Length: 115
Length: 114
Image (cartoon, rainbow over all chains, first blue to last red; front, top):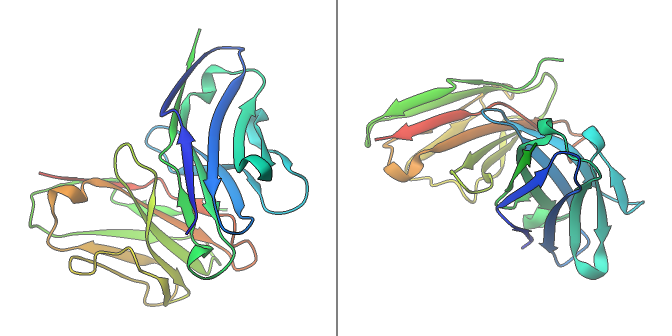
């Protein structure tokens, strides 16, 4: 069964600073990988996804993530944080067959952006 | 397009009472999901429907939780009787058959069990 581990339940950055949210996955086959964002009292919104092809994936709001098979990682980055980026971010993995075909989420990272 | 609609947004009940949540997915989306999100945790899949059939309910506590999607459109998730540990946000999501990797989530129904 696949799983994801998000390092750091809380991350704090200054406005304008680099955002780095870490995600490592465990899967017996190359998985599909996702980042979702959740603003307070709202549902999850897809930021970006990796399925096949280019390993550097660009998403909405200036975020991007790189699939690194050798490191089993899919870290989320943004060059310059904005106050509106404050939210909870979830990494998720989806296998391709059988019981691994469902979306499995990490425990989330709360991003705080300070002035 | 209209998003995934869920109701009620908030519900407070006593333990051992029952509660039902409703979800209307995006029009044309064949697949519907119910997730449970406990505070401090990531969402956990409870049940997945494709049209009106169940694809995966392996993590649904069937002694107290039930869900249906009778006409392959909207869905109801019921908890009876509720326990304290059922306090969570219940998220509904949907996806199309061609875009199965992209789930669209509703705003969720927050349940508090006292």
